[in-house]
Amino acid sequence: MELIIENLTKTYSNGVKALNNVNIKIGAGMFGLLGPNGAGKSTLMRTIATLQEGDSGSIVFDGVNIMEDKMTLRNSLGYLPQSFGVYPKMSAEDLLMHFAELKGISNKQERKEIVEAVLEQTNLTEARKKNVAGYSGGMKQRFGIAQLLLNNPRLIIVDEPTAGLDPAERSRFLNVLREIGTNHIVIFSTHIVEDVKELCTDMAIMNGGAILTHQTPREAVEQIKGKMWTKRIDRSALNEHKDSFEILSSKFNDDNSMNINVYSETQPDELFIQKEADLEDVYFVTLKNVN
Ligand SMILES: Nc1ncnc2c1ncn2[C@@H]1O[C@H](COP(=O)(O)OP(=O)(O)OP(=O)(O)O)[C@@H](O)[C@H]1O
Image 1 (cartoon, rainbow, N blue to C red):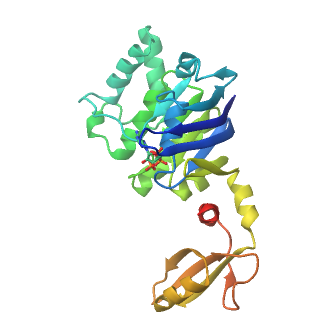
Image 2 (image 1 turned 90 degrees about the vertical axis):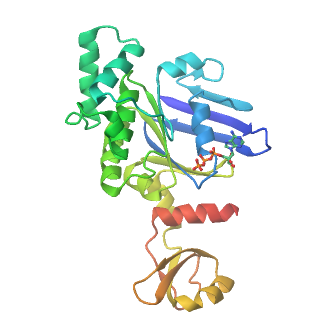
Image 3 (image 1 turned 45 degrees about the horizontal axis):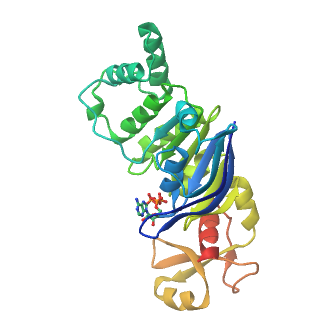
């Protein structure tokens, strides 16, 4: 199972180059697509999901060029968009039975079994009789996953699913995705670095329509190990430090001080101490290198 994207380009009619020669190979497992707002993540995901077309390049899923043969991909695709419509006042179970019928599962017993299974997979069995319209944000997102699992997709695309979820709901949602990720390709876009850290076996960072880096989270952190420095400064000294150092990120402390973080091969000055590199540092280093 493999998705291969080559030389994919898309320029919108207003001149925005949303995809700039994207090349990437994605295998089974949880793949995190990380990037700031406007990086091109949604454009890339919508193009893979065949909801819009690239200007040039190719996307091949399991040997089939999906730009030429959209139907084959659609039969094995589950797509959860960034936001989806309003649900009627129906229980999750009834609504899923209805969607299953629309998806062509005509045998009622078979439909029941599949619906039961997807409710279980998304931890919604207890809430199956409740109206989906009254579900919390996190439950709606899990329902979205239940719905896309009905036709047993091999490629699952979820566009910023954790945005707006509270920590408990986010964690439940990530657990559901984690289970699914073991035997599917799951492409998951987010601007939350923690999501990728907790969940993904593979990841890419995107900005300005281009893939800036494609590595496992562990490899990415390994690469900047020993090169991250932090210095505790008085908050009022921030501007003078900005003039002297390229500050990647900063954190306020409880007192009047703050920590500034810098990427450097060598100690930037004698008051900087080495900091344990993490994925957030990778994200900022990667974005900074192209700016
Ligand atoms: N239909 C469109 N017409 C014109 N420009 C568009 C269109 N859709 C997106 N863009 C622009 O293309 C660029 C990439 O947008 P895209 O939505 O793919 O990014 P994103 O990484 O998903 O961002 P976000 O996290 O904000 O959803 C942005 O500059 C955006 O303004």
